[in-house]
Length: 51
Image (cartoon, rainbow, N blue to C red; front, side, top):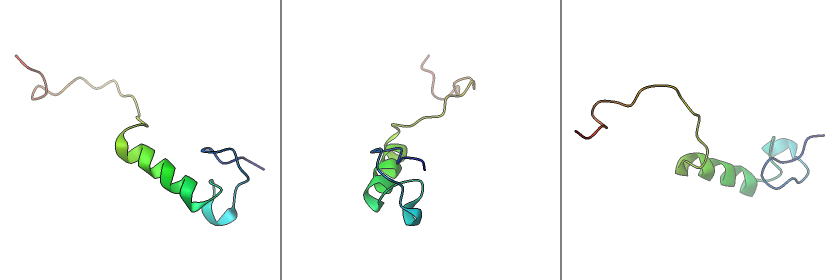
C-alpha cells in the first residue's frame, strides 16, 4: 500500500491519497501558497516586463 505523500503515514481510504484531513489540508495549502509550481516554457507577458 502507498504511503501518504505528506507525512509517510498509512493511507486512509476516505482521504486517499492522504492519511488524514490534516495532511490533505496541508497539501492544499502548499498549492494555494505557490509552494508547488508547474514549470512552463511560456515567454513572460509584455505587461509584466519593465521597460
